[in-house]
Length: 519
Image 1 (cartoon, rainbow, N blue to C red):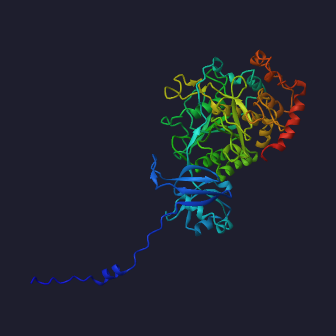
Image 2: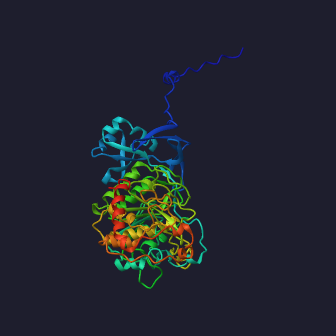
Image 3: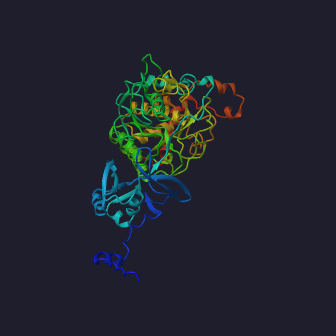
């Protein structure tokens, strides 16, 4: 008989542990959450676990649903929150803390969970409660990371008329005549939100004031040579304000105006906080005009916090007179939706036309399109071989990206000529004095879905801004004369010069009522 082996009984602590009920594990975050974006319910679904991006940020992929539309984004541990005065206490009671100010003048802050448990989506859902709203939390959305794109050149033009700055010539923009009225003012600043700028370019060296980098979070607004669209911001800045009458390169639309660049575009998704910081920079620096040749890759509804930031700059920038916020319409040949960036009240949306005053094949259109401008094909390029052309200038810039800075430069001329005018008054003036597009079929309000209210006309706008002096008539368009037998051209009679002041005055009065309640 084999010897009995004594049983080893567990000690009391171990026994208690074995008999105790299993410890409750932290519940995983729900896969689907609803939050409010400016009072609009948005449903978000987590698509996976957080993963590190190229910059070492832990981002969680999500899918957002706005009604019947959906798009993908990513989130980090933060949320963009708008607070009433005193709302900070409501955050503290909920275990949240302020990370950094985004646009504190209207209460926009970046917020995170003090214990690090919840991500931005969970925070937005928590702060959507009626209790939080009653305690001063007006809005809370995840710090959404969404891919942006430059409103760039979808084709390489090969028509010889695209060489030189034809978009400023006497048949279209009459810029030399406009510069006879004003060449701008060094007190007028245009902020270019884009890919950063080449501060060494000989046509920009003396025109650029300090900027901002919302990608790396510093004050160096220089372009990143690794970015696939590194030259984009430099090209836009050159059209707006390249040094003029200096015996070098090209002329800028507003020769005496100052420029500031914001580096925001990169090959990575940008958080919602990035454009808010960019617009706050325009607010803090007193910009008269903000030029935006960018947009979201997907036609997403604009987050309410970004909409509010844009509207605040439009209403309260430039010392309370407001800044003109110009956006490119985009290059997808599609209709713009009523909830997109271009439909924001404070945005002036610019489409693109070609050298024949006709629509380009790529420009977007719709009810939110305000004006059109010719594409600015010749402009400044990154110095050296890193740009589009080793000559430091390119003739291949285009898309609505290049039409937007043409219009932004004209807006800066008007702001210089009439600095007492508000941003809403400048926008209404630009609309009222626009040159009729020869191929447009405007509705009763004078708006065409493809050409908006017409083609930006700097001479007419400046003449009106400076007191309504009679402008010189537009010279005939040679291409229109060649096609004089075409009904589509022959039916577009130009306004007699003697009627111009009456036309501008009547149209301006009507459009002030029609605009998207800009004031």
